[in-house]
Length: 103
Image 1: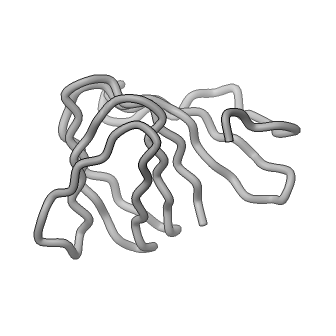
Image 2: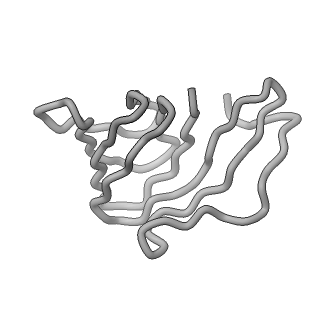
Image 3: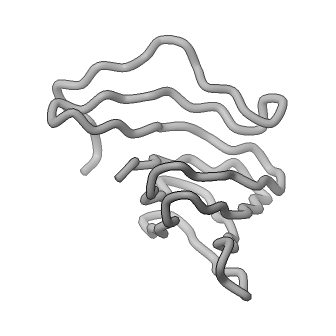
């Protein structure tokens, strides 16, 4: 899907890690929410409450899910899932555009 239709977007940005990650919350018609944003070159650790499906729109990253022993690489048009009440490390060497779907 190239765009979100019939949604509400929270105007105030979500800014994490001193501006290294910036996103906006998107409220979908079915009651679910997503976040669309960018991660600037960095290595960050995110904690999850809900399960997340991360969709890479542009850029490249490597990711290590909390329970995994190895890093995996992702690029444009690829996705990875993170369980609820978990965490993941993400490393980017270029700007990463993403959508995070909260499940």
